[in-house]
Length: 224
Image (tube, rainbow, N blue to C red; front, side):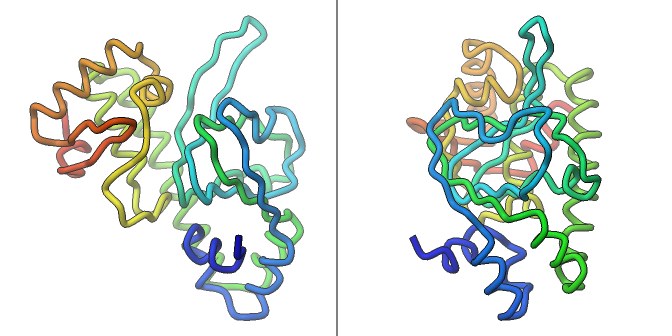
């Protein structure tokens, strides 16, 4: 795997850097292939790297001592997470778990800090990402409380196509009904019903192990 090419394709911020900065990022980024169900980052661990999904799908989740779990968000190919914990130099407050086999990049925390000190474009990118992340979680808190299951699935899928957080040009996402259920926090059976309703509405097409989005704006507005 050519890491420079992989970062160009899987990190929207990489091309904002100058050649010297890119060279250091390539040197200080480690790549790992993780299997479905693997914990990529543990809740409570000290944040020491910025985490990127070069391919695959992961979820950010929290749990308690009783074994109850809640998915906070999904992160598809092109997403980078964990900048908040790095900026605050704190222990992670969530688990990061692979929903399917994924290729994960880890950029060293000290190099992340160095980019903040030396790249204005990188700082601007990060500000936009943090702002979008806040909006995402405010929206999630709203729809988890107010929307019916069909609309929750619609909004969950729309999140995975956020052009700022996950800048993929594809309108097709490899994701199973079970994985959508995990992220939307509803049963697989109810997820299947919701996808059927969204397909009937002409918003998406369900394929084997994937979803093809036909109307992203319609997904965002569904159920309002």
